[in-house]
Image (cartoon, rainbow, N blue to C red; front, side):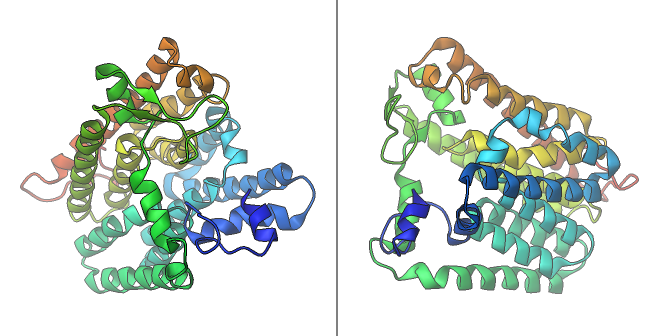
Length: 358
């Protein structure tokens, strides 16, 4: 759809609404410009991104992480070749590699570019800055954060003043959309309320998805947002306590996982974001974290895409499967957050052979 509008010379944010940040147009547009079968070239593009992810997993978790990531296409399924989320995921993990290898400014710049592609990489900017400060690199933290901010502002500036809402349209799109049917707040609604599903089997709602409409939805969303903010604050605080690689990687996982597990939208392709963290956790010896993440990623295939209509129709087994996946994500998040909280106990930061319990 977007490629057809662009072919007509229309400009996103000005001539038509666009819910993604502007640089997302690059991975969306490239397969179309190559010509031929769009799905084939998109798959090739995502394969190249997956190879980058594997290389980054090896850099952060060693050979075991690289081999563990080989399982990602099996666990994720078709999502990994039909959605561009491999690209921002590669930017996130690539930025972590740069930061760990003492390239803080370039790492922050890459997080900014990732944020211009799919927003969530920006969650890691305060975590990375806090980690640098904890390592005594306060000047690098300031320079990196400034570079990231400059990249984001430069990237958004051409679109900021467009008509039809401009970038405000993108922001209000996400603020106004209902709780998405696969999210943790939706699981609470299914358990406590009697939701009406927005959209139908054949036509999604005007936010291009299916959501839940129920009085319980807003309170459930608010509680989850507060919990997400609490985890993010904990991750930032904990990142100052450990100068080793885990001092960055574990809080980074907590930040991304909190956004996935507690946000009001949990699209199946978000599992792509978690797969490299599962591989890295395995390679660094955090086996429980790795197995939990891998189980959640794999379980998503139980209903998507084959039984997604069952979920829309409120089939009991599909609802239970989604709830089970979300509970696994919450369990991993709770375990990771508990580990971060232990880092904040009085006393010297505990570093053992470059590893920490998540």
